[in-house]
Image 1: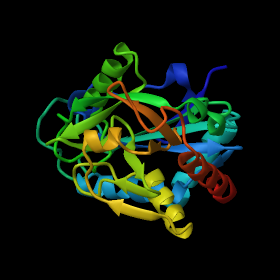
Image 2: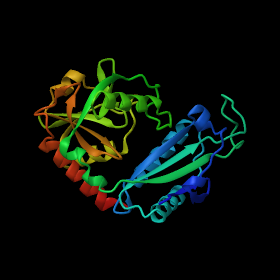
Image 3: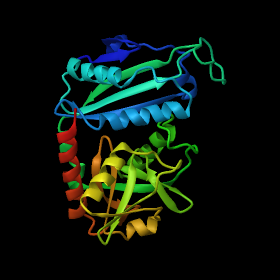
Image 4: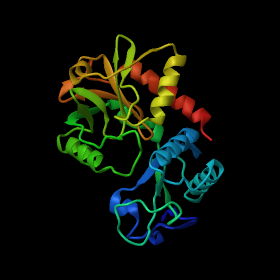
Length: 287
């Protein structure tokens, strides 16, 4: 079945969705995006994603074309039009097209931003087999640009890293800078040692994950100790458990890093319980 895709104010069949070849996201990677999970036809942590979208736009002096109510209406219409039960809603806002290629940002108001939004169906999203089996990761040098806290469409290195991991027979990559793990290719990274969660503190070096925020809040509510600091690959390999968080993977255990088993080499009870708490809370709070 053809999806109904939102492009610049209207829903159209996906085969008819078009943007200009001069759009700055195509030519310059000049755009931002968000991905919101959908469970049971409802949006997970929608306001968190909208807040981060606004932050990304503000950091790049990129106009956010809609307010919260309009964005919510578009998301809900996309979910309804496509009969989405479990899956994702992807939105992208670019600086638009001023009709030619130019390195300089167009003057404010010179061209309207481009808005694209579409759904992706992922039946059984909350019951991902990776949550039961765990994932294996490799480490790669973090060679991304210095503003990883802005959720831009510049995803070439993340795509390259995931492909390198797959070619190595693994599921994903953890990125390393100065000997310390920054984050996953498209996720935040954590280890668990002696019942304590360790994850890198927020900075320009990592994406300010919406799932990360929710998980750390829930951990605090469960009186779990959290230490926000960098950790090394060796420390991760010696941890009791490890995991990632993202909008599409929720809380997923990591069982191997560069061929070295983490803990028992199988998903552990700590991460399993954290995932259970997160999914339950998000399913209940979805709108």
